[in-house]
Picture 1 (cartoon, helix red, strand yellow):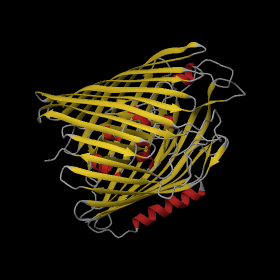
Picture 2 (cartoon, one colour; picture 1 turned 180 degrees about the vertical axis):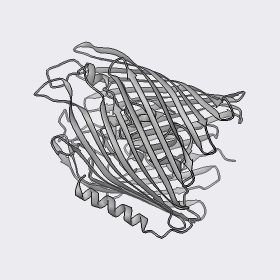
Picture 3 (cartoon, one colour; picture 1 turned 135 degrees about the vertical axis):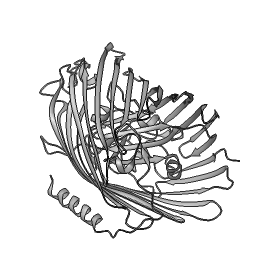
Picture 4 (cartoon, helix red, strand yellow; picture 1 turned 90 degrees about the vertical axis):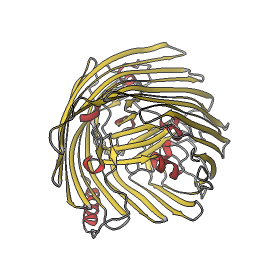
Length: 605
């Protein structure tokens, strides 16, 4: 481990341990429920992982302009975007590659079978009820891709009607509405939205490819449906979300259509045995209209059966099965059909865990088998100790793997140093993590995580030695994450700080677009008469990119909201208060000082 990081980790742990412990009357507690870390409902203090839960109230209070901006504020997450809203967006979780984070929507895997990533640019915040971010490997629970962790998005619950209208800089305008009917036993609802921006030029003269000063706009149409009904001791639920986006770029247009959904039957088999059976589908269709028109189609069908069997008052066995069929097809104007391939994977997983007095234990093991890449076995071990009513430490070890995507496997040799290789092995990882959560005084909550990951068999295109993708690289990822939250009466204060070292172990070079240091701070104050003020700040250190280094930057944002009736609220946000020039990707522009105004109706009488 890098000596600087070893010292930082030690200091962080000691500083938290030395905080005087007193009862936290008004602090956010550790008993919030999450479902992503182990695929079953558990309080946060039994997750044995670094978990962030962002609920609908947090989303609205943040006034974030889009999902990629909201994710970039979280500890351990770096973001990149090629241009303004709607531009291709990527997320790096704990220093891993963009395809090292498993992305789920309502429990359905949505990453493209082509590049192995999900573009968060097209998923509007108006469609989201809750986000759970689990840092660290989760392959023993979820299988491929969860090397850096899992980002799980839950779509909006339309049981309470709502509506929103938005206007802002760069020709931003949009509207959304949701409504539902039914009762506690059954119901049906929808949320629909539309966004449009005239935008600004996506690129600048530093761009490697064509540069044009025209405005690059964005349009997004989206719809989600949710339904549920009770069948005896079981509940049958259906959820579907679809987005249809048009993204303008210099001298071209990309049409991006994404749809995912599932049918779930869940309930009790006995008084100690509950289960959940889900059939899911996800698809992505990309069509690029330019001098080099290109299309990609991704399909994934899946079936998951997850079981939870209580073996004691606070202990349980969990086990389940997974089956999925993935298909990817690519074509372009010059070559016609480039590839059209499929593969089928099956998995079996099991685990045991629970609370034993002040201790929590979790053991899990999973076996994945594929007719394309063979198999992978992954495990996870976690232990937690609540050494006081208000403090808990955790220690975990876990493995991860990533199956090669279809581009890496089957893209033909075009002579430009990029060609697939059907003999690729899955990437594999192992991670140690230490964590500590403390509620030291009334209204305060502190958290710290120290981790060290090693990734082997990384897939790279090694031109000019060969045009084919090969398993050649290794990565070393280590870091420290600190989080703080304070809430008392009219004041809220929160922040997080991330130190990380993400390097190519073979060359010692830093991995691209991952900052060594980043921080976020938000301050809020609630006045009388429904008026609230807020100030947000972000800092990101310099980082390497293709062709050049990206400079460090600091941004400040101001937000105001006024709940002038129980049902109506108006929000105003001033983004990039100091009109700072900065870059998320070399050669691509970002917004300057800009404004956004929202009128919100929450359906209350």
